[in-house]
Length: 256
Image (tube, rainbow, N blue to C red; front, side):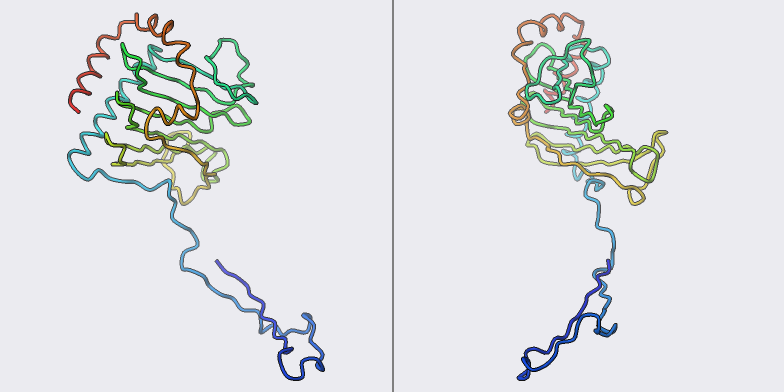
Protein backbone atom coordinates (compact mmCIF):
# COMPACT_ATOMS: atom_id res chain seq x y z
CA UNK A 1 0.00 0.00 0.00
CA UNK A 2 1.37 3.43 -0.95
CA UNK A 3 0.80 6.63 0.96
CA UNK A 4 1.56 10.02 -0.58
CA UNK A 5 2.76 12.51 1.98
CA UNK A 6 2.89 16.26 1.51
CA UNK A 7 5.67 17.98 3.43
CA UNK A 8 5.03 21.68 3.89
CA UNK A 9 7.98 23.76 5.05
CA UNK A 10 6.81 26.90 6.79
CA UNK A 11 9.58 28.93 8.38
CA UNK A 12 7.53 30.74 11.00
CA UNK A 13 9.73 29.43 13.83
CA UNK A 14 12.66 31.59 12.75
CA UNK A 15 13.49 34.81 14.58
CA UNK A 16 12.04 36.75 11.64
CA UNK A 17 8.84 34.71 11.50
CA UNK A 18 6.48 37.60 11.88
CA UNK A 19 8.20 39.67 9.20
CA UNK A 20 8.35 36.99 6.50
CA UNK A 21 5.70 36.21 3.93
CA UNK A 22 4.63 32.56 4.05
CA UNK A 23 4.50 30.75 0.70
CA UNK A 24 1.13 29.42 -0.40
CA UNK A 25 0.62 25.69 -1.02
CA UNK A 26 0.45 26.38 -4.76
CA UNK A 27 4.08 27.54 -4.70
CA UNK A 28 5.44 24.41 -3.03
CA UNK A 29 7.89 22.50 -5.21
CA UNK A 30 6.87 19.02 -6.40
CA UNK A 31 9.97 17.62 -4.66
CA UNK A 32 8.01 17.66 -1.42
CA UNK A 33 5.71 14.83 -2.58
CA UNK A 34 7.22 11.59 -1.32
CA UNK A 35 6.11 8.00 -1.99
CA UNK A 36 6.44 5.77 1.05
CA UNK A 37 6.17 1.99 0.80
CA UNK A 38 4.53 0.45 3.86
CA UNK A 39 4.93 -3.31 4.18
CA UNK A 40 5.81 -5.91 1.58
CA UNK A 41 2.38 -7.54 1.27
CA UNK A 42 -0.71 -5.78 0.00
CA UNK A 43 -3.00 -8.49 1.35
CA UNK A 44 -3.40 -9.61 4.93
CA UNK A 45 -3.89 -13.27 5.73
CA UNK A 46 -7.51 -14.38 5.63
CA UNK A 47 -8.51 -15.67 9.06
CA UNK A 48 -11.60 -17.60 7.97
CA UNK A 49 -9.68 -19.76 5.50
CA UNK A 50 -7.10 -20.90 8.05
CA UNK A 51 -7.09 -24.63 8.82
CA UNK A 52 -6.04 -26.58 11.91
CA UNK A 53 -4.89 -30.19 11.77
CA UNK A 54 -5.55 -32.84 14.41
CA UNK A 55 -2.52 -33.19 16.68
CA UNK A 56 -2.97 -36.52 18.45
CA UNK A 57 -4.94 -39.76 18.53
CA UNK A 58 -7.30 -38.63 21.28
CA UNK A 59 -8.24 -35.55 19.25
CA UNK A 60 -8.72 -37.72 16.17
CA UNK A 61 -11.16 -39.94 18.06
CA UNK A 62 -13.02 -36.86 19.27
CA UNK A 63 -13.35 -35.62 15.69
CA UNK A 64 -14.68 -39.04 14.62
CA UNK A 65 -17.21 -38.88 17.45
CA UNK A 66 -18.50 -35.52 16.18
CA UNK A 67 -18.62 -36.75 12.59
CA UNK A 68 -20.74 -39.74 13.64
CA UNK A 69 -23.09 -37.47 15.51
CA UNK A 70 -23.47 -35.35 12.39
CA UNK A 71 -24.15 -38.48 10.34
CA UNK A 72 -26.99 -39.41 12.70
CA UNK A 73 -28.32 -35.88 12.54
CA UNK A 74 -28.41 -35.99 8.74
CA UNK A 75 -30.38 -39.25 8.90
CA UNK A 76 -32.90 -37.65 11.24
CA UNK A 77 -33.15 -34.57 9.03
CA UNK A 78 -33.76 -36.74 5.96
CA UNK A 79 -36.54 -38.56 7.82
CA UNK A 80 -37.79 -35.35 9.46
CA UNK A 81 -37.74 -37.35 12.68
CA UNK A 82 -37.24 -35.52 16.00
CA UNK A 83 -36.73 -32.33 13.96
CA UNK A 84 -38.59 -29.22 15.09
CA UNK A 85 -38.90 -26.08 13.00
CA UNK A 86 -39.03 -22.52 14.29
CA UNK A 87 -39.07 -19.11 12.65
CA UNK A 88 -38.54 -15.46 13.47
CA UNK A 89 -40.62 -12.88 11.62
CA UNK A 90 -39.01 -9.69 10.33
CA UNK A 91 -39.38 -6.93 12.92
CA UNK A 92 -40.30 -9.36 15.72
CA UNK A 93 -38.13 -10.52 18.60
CA UNK A 94 -39.91 -13.73 19.53
CA UNK A 95 -39.07 -17.07 17.91
CA UNK A 96 -42.13 -19.27 17.36
CA UNK A 97 -42.86 -22.76 16.03
CA UNK A 98 -42.99 -22.70 12.25
CA UNK A 99 -46.51 -22.69 10.83
CA UNK A 100 -47.25 -24.20 7.42
CA UNK A 101 -48.45 -21.63 4.92
CA UNK A 102 -46.59 -18.72 6.45
CA UNK A 103 -45.36 -16.19 3.90
CA UNK A 104 -41.61 -16.85 3.66
CA UNK A 105 -41.05 -13.26 2.52
CA UNK A 106 -41.86 -12.24 6.08
CA UNK A 107 -39.29 -14.55 7.67
CA UNK A 108 -36.03 -13.15 9.02
CA UNK A 109 -34.50 -16.51 9.98
CA UNK A 110 -35.44 -20.13 10.59
CA UNK A 111 -34.25 -22.78 13.03
CA UNK A 112 -34.14 -26.55 13.08
CA UNK A 113 -33.80 -28.29 16.44
CA UNK A 114 -33.15 -32.01 16.99
CA UNK A 115 -33.40 -33.84 20.30
CA UNK A 116 -31.43 -36.90 21.29
CA UNK A 117 -33.78 -39.89 20.81
CA UNK A 118 -35.97 -40.60 23.83
CA UNK A 119 -34.61 -37.64 25.79
CA UNK A 120 -35.20 -33.91 26.20
CA UNK A 121 -31.54 -33.14 25.48
CA UNK A 122 -30.67 -31.08 22.43
CA UNK A 123 -28.37 -32.67 19.86
CA UNK A 124 -28.50 -30.09 17.08
CA UNK A 125 -29.51 -26.50 16.28
CA UNK A 126 -29.43 -25.14 12.74
CA UNK A 127 -29.85 -21.39 12.16
CA UNK A 128 -30.65 -20.14 8.65
CA UNK A 129 -30.49 -16.40 7.97
CA UNK A 130 -32.25 -14.93 4.94
CA UNK A 131 -30.93 -12.06 2.86
CA UNK A 132 -33.01 -9.34 1.22
CA UNK A 133 -33.59 -11.61 -1.80
CA UNK A 134 -34.95 -14.34 0.47
CA UNK A 135 -32.02 -16.64 -0.24
CA UNK A 136 -29.96 -18.37 2.45
CA UNK A 137 -26.90 -16.19 3.03
CA UNK A 138 -25.70 -17.73 6.26
CA UNK A 139 -26.34 -21.15 7.77
CA UNK A 140 -24.88 -22.12 11.15
CA UNK A 141 -25.00 -25.69 12.42
CA UNK A 142 -24.34 -26.52 16.06
CA UNK A 143 -23.80 -30.11 17.24
CA UNK A 144 -23.91 -30.83 20.99
CA UNK A 145 -23.04 -33.91 23.01
CA UNK A 146 -25.40 -35.20 25.70
CA UNK A 147 -23.75 -32.92 28.23
CA UNK A 148 -24.74 -29.94 26.09
CA UNK A 149 -21.15 -29.14 25.05
CA UNK A 150 -20.64 -27.80 21.53
CA UNK A 151 -18.64 -30.43 19.65
CA UNK A 152 -18.99 -29.22 16.07
CA UNK A 153 -19.81 -25.86 14.53
CA UNK A 154 -20.37 -25.54 10.77
CA UNK A 155 -20.56 -22.24 8.92
CA UNK A 156 -22.06 -22.00 5.43
CA UNK A 157 -21.89 -18.77 3.45
CA UNK A 158 -22.86 -17.88 -0.11
CA UNK A 159 -22.48 -14.68 -2.09
CA UNK A 160 -23.10 -13.45 -5.62
CA UNK A 161 -20.54 -10.67 -5.15
CA UNK A 162 -17.39 -12.74 -4.86
CA UNK A 163 -15.81 -11.65 -8.21
CA UNK A 164 -14.20 -15.08 -8.64
CA UNK A 165 -17.46 -16.89 -9.56
CA UNK A 166 -21.10 -16.24 -10.35
CA UNK A 167 -21.81 -17.52 -6.87
CA UNK A 168 -19.24 -18.63 -4.30
CA UNK A 169 -19.84 -20.90 -1.31
CA UNK A 170 -17.76 -21.13 1.83
CA UNK A 171 -17.79 -24.03 4.26
CA UNK A 172 -15.93 -23.93 7.60
CA UNK A 173 -16.00 -26.71 10.18
CA UNK A 174 -14.81 -26.25 13.78
CA UNK A 175 -14.31 -29.42 15.83
CA UNK A 176 -14.14 -29.33 19.64
CA UNK A 177 -13.34 -31.89 22.30
CA UNK A 178 -15.44 -32.65 25.40
CA UNK A 179 -13.97 -29.57 27.09
CA UNK A 180 -14.91 -27.35 24.15
CA UNK A 181 -11.26 -26.93 23.13
CA UNK A 182 -10.74 -26.41 19.39
CA UNK A 183 -8.93 -29.45 17.97
CA UNK A 184 -9.52 -29.18 14.23
CA UNK A 185 -10.72 -26.69 11.62
CA UNK A 186 -11.38 -27.23 7.94
CA UNK A 187 -12.18 -24.74 5.18
CA UNK A 188 -13.27 -24.93 1.56
CA UNK A 189 -14.59 -22.51 -1.05
CA UNK A 190 -16.27 -23.58 -4.29
CA UNK A 191 -18.60 -22.42 -7.06
CA UNK A 192 -22.10 -23.53 -8.01
CA UNK A 193 -20.73 -26.61 -9.77
CA UNK A 194 -18.67 -27.61 -6.70
CA UNK A 195 -15.44 -26.60 -8.43
CA UNK A 196 -12.84 -25.40 -5.91
CA UNK A 197 -11.97 -21.70 -5.88
CA UNK A 198 -8.94 -19.81 -4.62
CA UNK A 199 -9.84 -17.49 -1.75
CA UNK A 200 -7.10 -15.10 -2.92
CA UNK A 201 -9.12 -14.55 -6.10
CA UNK A 202 -12.39 -13.96 -4.28
CA UNK A 203 -13.95 -11.16 -2.31
CA UNK A 204 -16.13 -12.38 0.55
CA UNK A 205 -18.09 -10.03 2.76
CA UNK A 206 -17.23 -11.39 6.21
CA UNK A 207 -19.97 -11.37 8.80
CA UNK A 208 -19.73 -11.37 12.58
CA UNK A 209 -20.85 -14.63 14.13
CA UNK A 210 -20.64 -16.43 17.45
CA UNK A 211 -19.56 -19.96 18.27
CA UNK A 212 -21.20 -21.04 21.50
CA UNK A 213 -19.55 -23.19 24.15
CA UNK A 214 -22.71 -25.11 24.92
CA UNK A 215 -26.44 -25.26 24.22
CA UNK A 216 -27.37 -23.17 27.27
CA UNK A 217 -25.20 -20.33 26.01
CA UNK A 218 -26.83 -20.50 22.58
CA UNK A 219 -30.33 -20.64 23.98
CA UNK A 220 -29.70 -17.71 26.32
CA UNK A 221 -29.55 -15.61 23.16
CA UNK A 222 -32.43 -17.13 21.17
CA UNK A 223 -34.75 -18.46 23.88
CA UNK A 224 -36.16 -21.17 21.66
CA UNK A 225 -39.72 -22.13 22.74
CA UNK A 226 -38.82 -25.73 23.58
CA UNK A 227 -41.19 -26.15 26.52
CA UNK A 228 -44.17 -25.77 24.22
CA UNK A 229 -43.25 -28.92 22.31
CA UNK A 230 -41.63 -31.17 24.91
CA UNK A 231 -44.88 -32.50 26.36
CA UNK A 232 -46.78 -32.82 23.08
CA UNK A 233 -44.88 -33.17 19.83
CA UNK A 234 -41.77 -34.76 21.31
CA UNK A 235 -43.68 -37.89 22.32
CA UNK A 236 -45.59 -38.10 19.05
CA UNK A 237 -42.47 -37.72 16.93
CA UNK A 238 -40.67 -40.35 18.98
CA UNK A 239 -43.30 -42.83 17.88
CA UNK A 240 -41.27 -42.98 14.66
CA UNK A 241 -39.01 -46.02 14.66
CA UNK A 242 -35.66 -44.59 15.78
CA UNK A 243 -34.34 -47.55 17.78
CA UNK A 244 -31.41 -48.07 15.41
CA UNK A 245 -30.35 -44.42 15.63
CA UNK A 246 -30.82 -44.32 19.38
CA UNK A 247 -28.60 -47.36 19.88
CA UNK A 248 -25.96 -45.88 17.60
CA UNK A 249 -25.86 -42.60 19.52
CA UNK A 250 -25.77 -44.34 22.89
CA UNK A 251 -22.85 -46.51 21.82
CA UNK A 252 -20.87 -43.43 20.77
CA UNK A 253 -21.56 -41.64 24.03
CA UNK A 254 -20.40 -44.68 26.01
CA UNK A 255 -17.10 -44.65 24.13
CA UNK A 256 -16.39 -41.12 25.38
